[in-house]
Image (cartoon, rainbow, N blue to C red):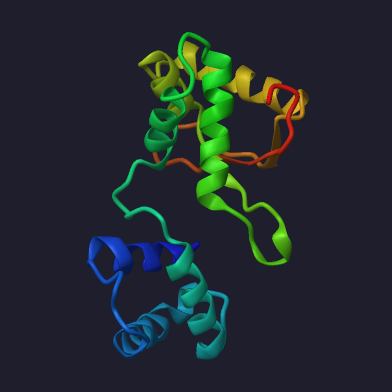
Length: 171
C-alpha cells in the first residue's frame, strides 16, 4: 500500500509521470532507506520492482477522491436507481484497483460514510447504517466479496475492503 501511494505521489502530485528510471531510482532508494522501519520489504531490488509495477498502475493522484470519482463515473450510466448506482461505483472502484500478480482482483476500500455521502448526500448515522445494510446485501447476493471488515468510527477509520465479483446477476 505504501509503495502505491508513493508512486501515485511521484507520478501525479509531483508531476513525474514522464521521469526516466535514472531520475526515479535514486528517489526510490532514498524513500526505501527512510521507510525501512515501516515496510516489510528487506531488499531494495524487491522494492524497486514493486515501485515500477505500482508506478505503471497508478491512475490517480494522492489528493483524488477515488470513491467520489467512481460514483461520478457510475452516475454517467445510472440515474434513479441507487442500488444499481452503488453496484456500478463498486465496479469502477474495482477497475481502478485492478488485478495483482497471479490475476487475483485487488480489494478496494469503501466505507459506509462514503456510500451514504455519495448516494444520499449525508453521512449521518442512520444513513451510514443503511449503507452498511446495502453493502451486506450486495455481499449476500454475490455482487461483492468482503475481504477485510473495517472499523466503524470517525472519518479516517479503516474502511472495509471488497472485491467486485465479475458476472454478478445484475450485469
